[in-house]
Amino acid sequence: MQQGFRHWFLEQLAMYAAYHRDRRNRLTHHIGVPLIVFSLLLALTQVQVMRIEDFPLTGAAIVLGLLLLGYIAAVPLIGVLTAIFYGAVYSLVMKIAGDAPQAVWTVAGAGFVVGWIFQFVGHAFEGRRPALTVNALQAFMAPPFLIAEMLFAAGFEKDLEASLQKRAVKYLPDQNAA
Image 1 (spheres, rainbow, N blue to C red):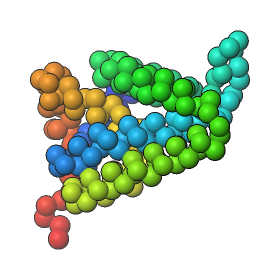
Image 2 (spheres, rainbow, N blue to C red; image 1 turned 135 degrees about the vertical axis):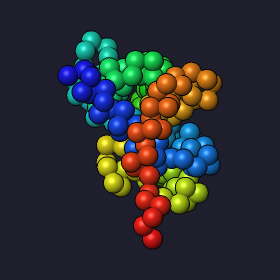
Image 3 (cartoon, rainbow, N blue to C red; image 1 turned 135 degrees about the horizontal axis):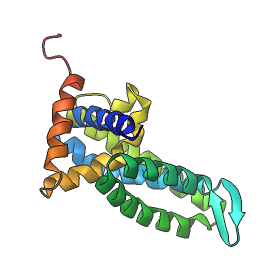
Image 4 (cartoon, rainbow, N blue to C red; image 1 turned 120 degrees about the horizontal axis):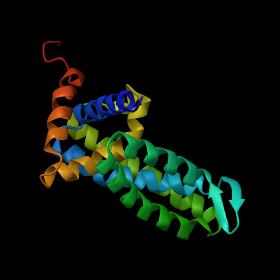
């Protein structure tokens, strides 16, 4: 089961890589993705599922926890680094979450819109629509891929990078169709 999930996860990352080959697109995603995740987590803090003593268990904690567990299970180093980064984002989110609801929703909405502007500008550079328009699950691949990309740039996980690039070929646009 673990290997099956890892294989599926790596295929998803490879598809994401195929849709993000332009350096400018990738750079805009390093701004847009964290903004969108921040915004979604902030919005999800407004959905309280239950309270455990003084800790409110919100939709944000549940969604983030499940995603991070999946990332860690599939690619441990990338998953742990993603957890550290988005744990810091979650900490910031929780500081804002207690503000007046109108302020929370305004910040969440503004961050979401600005994040998506960065995404679409990046895809204009790429000349290709976002991968999530083909496969909605690609929305969940952005955070670990951005962490992986930073590891690759620093010279780590070169075998994983080569594997993803090899797998990504099938998701590239057909050069002969036109």
